Amino acid sequence: MLAINEKHIRTHFLNASKKERTELTLPEGLDAVDWDSLDYFGWRDPRISKRAYAFIPLESGEVVGVLFRQQTPPPNPQLCGWCHDVRMRNEVVFCSAKRSGPSGRNGNSVGVYVCQDFQCSLNVREDPPLPYDGFDQDAARTRRIDGLVERIRGFAANL
Ligand SMILES: [Zn+2]
Image 1 (cartoon, protein in one colour):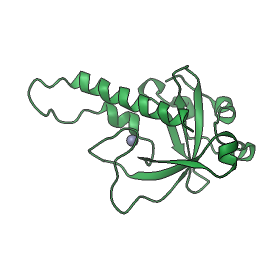
Image 2 (cartoon, protein in one colour; image 1 turned 60 degrees about the vertical axis):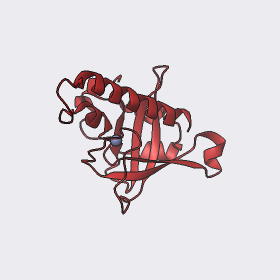
Image 3 (tube, helix red, strand yellow; image 1 turned 180 degrees about the vertical axis):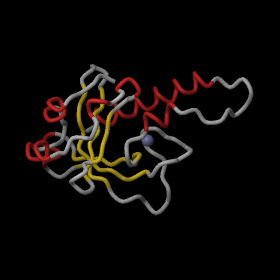
Image 4 (cartoon, protein in one colour; image 1 turned 90 degrees about the horizontal axis):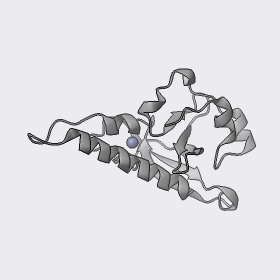
């Protein structure tokens, strides 16, 4: 994805109030992020409990931000709704996002189970063991990345 900076972060949210955009804490090491290896960029606010953010590139190329409220991990492990990683090596939490515009101001939100630290891009790139000889790892990886991109775009478009 394209690199984003602090100014972009504070001005491109779909569903955050001015107060929320001002009070957010930037992730550590924003200058050192390997953007090429990410399909979207998310982090948990280190100072505000249960607050998290994700920046998602739309089909138009624009990168938009979503503010989430993260809940505690569910009693039963859930599949991440974005990367669908069946190995489930990280916690998956329920996140809710206020809808954008008037609908959100009326209290409507959208929920999704998602990797707690937004590890989806890593999960879709790491290859599982070969299921059988001759299995096409590259094609499978491309399919996982495409699926993730489609799902995060769909989520942002429906907000
Ligand atoms: Zn995930």
